[in-house]
Image 1 (spheres, rainbow, N blue to C red):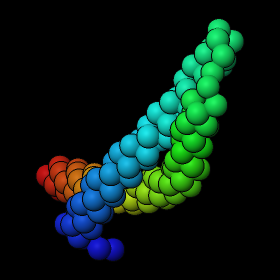
Image 2 (tube, rainbow, N blue to C red):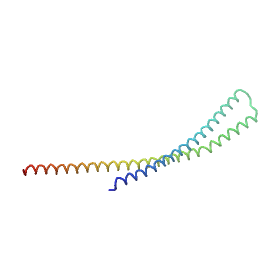
Image 3 (tube, one colour):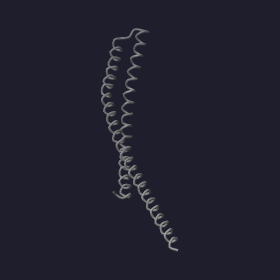
Image 4 (cartoon, one colour):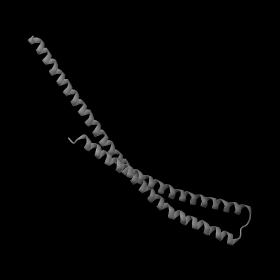
Length: 149
């Protein structure tokens, strides 16, 4: 079985990879949050513009030009929303893939931690057995020496 130092080195390597994947994941989270925020703001602007227009319609008459300008504004917002939705979905997918890679890296680190722990326990058990064996030999020698007297 490989030496304990080898396991420590491999574990350190996996920990560095895990940290890189953590940074990558954090970057993808930030990109997703940015795009989702922009989409949310566009949806909120559209909702607000529609409410404001409905309010104006109910209180007074509106000129045809104002109606057309408002419709163009709503259309631009809808176009912006339609452009942002795939970007948000792509960012979400990239974030989820990155999260899965981070999870896999974390699992790898845990595997090596467990291997090291098991190796340490085995070494401790073997030392204990060796000590018991030596104590048995010592006891046997003392017993035989006391019999020979």
